[in-house]
Length: 258
Image (cartoon, rainbow, N blue to C red):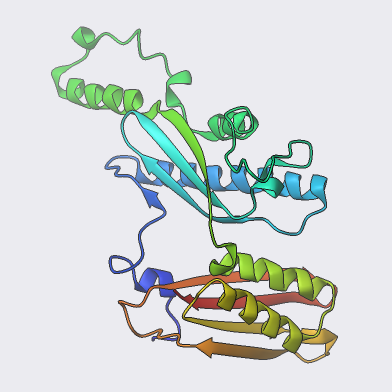
């Protein structure tokens, strides 16, 4: 079973943490769908920037969502700040921090997808005195739940110091080279060298599909250093990335031992 389980889920509680941290008793599925809409909104915003700048790098390594009764904090970890803010707004090399004005558009789009159930129900006109004692407790719980849903959104962007230490950035680099029809062995060798420059202890790459346009699908793999997949205390980052080429869809899997 060690080859079939996701390395990140396998290490939850040891070296990996959840990307979404919140607790919900009554409406768990609705909060889960809310997280999905936030992820999709940020990804769509990134796709528009990539089209406007003609860039193939996404730059987002991971997204964290932290919720409590009063606010919702969304942390976006990115590798290339210049590509994220778009072509029209360029920053100097000495200033790597984004201002609140740069985040205004993204924050507005994320705010639109956050659930606000209070708008659909008029809770102020509910009179608890005219409700039966049996249903009064349920209505009070309903009011408390609706009042807790309306959270303040806090959006922050954090820069990754070593981009090529993240498996998703390596996968995006490989996908870009595959679209340009670079030879597979050369791509893997260059990707491993980029990861080694970021001071990783080991890297493993697997690709599968119609590599180099060959009619029959095959798989290629390369490994450098140590990648102890069965050791729970080992800090291993994992990424699966699918790239669309003229030959079809190619799958990329990357393990990085940091």
